[in-house]
Length: 188
Image 1 (tube, rainbow, N blue to C red):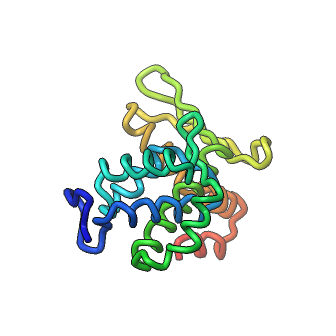
Image 2 (image 1 turned 135 degrees about the horizontal axis):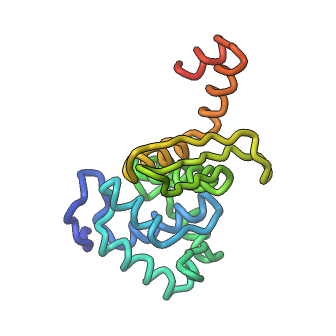
Image 3 (image 1 turned 180 degrees about the vertical axis):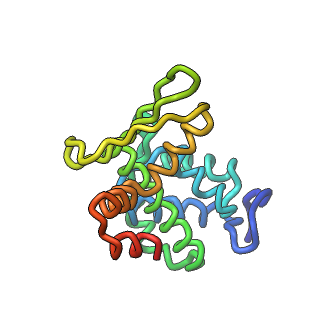
C-alpha cells in the first residue's frame, strides 16, 4: 500500500510511511552514531529514495513514538527504534538499504575528515589564501598554503581537500621523497 507522497521519488524508492520510518531507524542503528536531521533528510532526498516532506514527517513521528530522540538538531536511536531496525530491516529493498548505508558512511567519513583536517580560508590582496592542515591527533603533519584568485576557487580547493586529505598527504609525501611507486598507487 502506497500512502506517502511520491514526488521526486525514483522507481525503487519508498512510498510507504512505515517503510520510511523503518529506513530511518535502520540508518541510525546501522551506523550506531547520532546524525543531524539535515543529514538524514539530505541523504534520503539526494538519492531520490524518499520525498522531503515524508522524510521530515517520519522523523517527527519516530520522535513522538520515542523510537528516536532529538537534541540540538541531532537524532539518536533509542532502544525501541533499534528493535524496529533489527526486526524489520529485511522488509526494505536491499538496494535501498545498501545505498542509504553507503551514503551515511560516506557522510560520516567526510565529517571526520573535516574535523581532523581543517581548512582556513582568509582574504588576501587580490584573492584568498587557503591553508590546508593535514593533522594527526591535533598535530599538523603537513600544512599547505595556496593562493587562489576568488572565493569560488577557495571553496573548490577546500571541498577537494576534504574529499581525500590522506590521499593528498600521500601524494605530496611521495612527490617530495621521489617515491614513484607511491605516486603510481595514488592514481590507480
